Image (cartoon, one colour):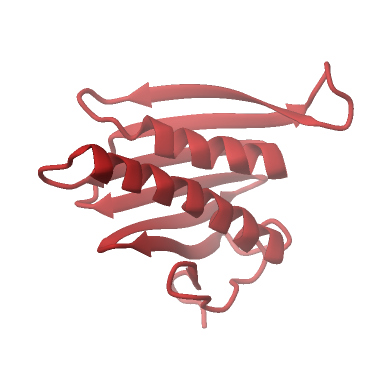
Length: 150
């Protein structure tokens, strides 16, 4: 199973979120960037079998937000979705920056975060939880191989 799982993209209306994934043993590290790249938040989510609901997976989450950043909702959405679906530990760093952002812009980034989480789940599912890189998809869901991959 390759360590570098490639690039997944969600975008609309001039905004673009990119996620680069990397397997670290049985765990997954995801770097989410939008606008000017930086680290504004780190979320660690651990998926495990639920003790209260047999057959379901629970997620425990820890968050580190660097003030004054507000990327937690995007990072948490991605981390918890992947940990719930695939188990193991998922670490997500997120940095999203857009000058002069208003309420509609914030909602647009949050929507892209939800879309990106779904695209990542689909991409990892097609790869058998991170096998060979999947081919490029539509404009709103591009999956590209990682560095050095065909």
